[in-house]
Length: 362
Image (cartoon, rainbow, N blue to C red):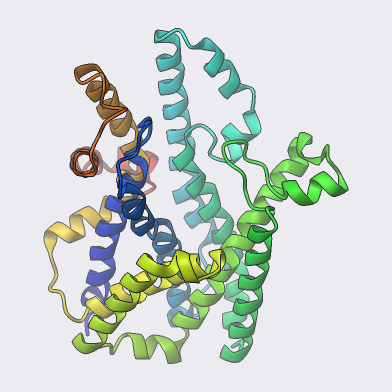
C-alpha cells in the first residue's frame, strides 16, 4: 500500500476537523444559542483532540520508521514563526477595531498582560494551540530516546495510563488552564501560595506544566499506536473495520461526555477519530480536493477567526436581531461560508513560498 493511500483518510478527517473548529467558534457574540446547538458543538469538539493525536502519532511513526534524530529545531520554527506573525496580525487588528469603535479600555486591558500575549496565545483565543503544540513537540525529544532504547510496549502503556490519570486529577481538582485569564493550578496555588500567579515566571511555568500534562497522554498513546506491532495492524484495517471504527468514533463523540471522565473522553475522541481516519485510508480514493483542503487546514485554522468576526459584524448590521435570534441552520451556513472563504484565501496565499513560510511555516 502506498503511503499516499494510507494518508487519504487522515486528509479527509482533517477537512472534517477544521470545519468542526469553525463550527465551535461561529457562535462568538451570539447571545441566545438556538436549541440543539450545544449538541452540535459537543460533537464538533473532537477537532482539537484529533489534531493533537494526529500530529503526535505521525511524528512518532516517523521516529519508529527512520530511527533518526527528531528535527526539533525545524519543527519548532514551523510553529513559532507563524505564531509570531499571527499574534502580531491579530494584535494590530484588535487595536484598530477597538480604536475605531472607541473601546480603548479593551485595548488597554489586552496590553496589560504581555506574558499572555507573547507566550500563551492571549492575542486571540485560538492561538493557544500553537504554543500548546510546541510544548508537546519539545517532549518528542524524550520519545526519541525511548524509541532508540526500544522501550517495551507494556511500559509505554503503563506510562500512558498513569499520565492519563494525572491529567484527569488535574482537571477534576480545578487545576487546569483557566481562560481567558490564562492561569493554571489556581486551586492548588490558592492554598499553597496565593500570590504565585502574580509572578510572570511562575505563572508561565505552571501553564507550561498543565500543557505538558495535557500533551503527555496524547504522546504516550501515540507511541502505542505508532509502535511497529500496533501500526502494522492499523495499516491492514479493512472496509469492515472502517465501519466499526467510524461507529466507535460516532459513539464516543455523541455519548463520551456523559459516560467518560473528562481526560479519558478527550483522548478517546482524539484517537477514535484518528483510527477511523486511518481505517478509511484503505477505502477512500485519492482526492485532489481533499488533499488541497487538508494542506490548507493549518492556514484555515489561523485565519478563520477574522472572517468569523467580519461575518458577525455584517450580519449584526444587516439584521440587528441576529445575535438574539439565530437558528442552527443559519450558524451552519455561516460556518460553511467562513470555511470556504478561509480555504480560498489560504490556498491563494500558499502559492507564494516566501509568504507561506512566514504565515504557515511551510
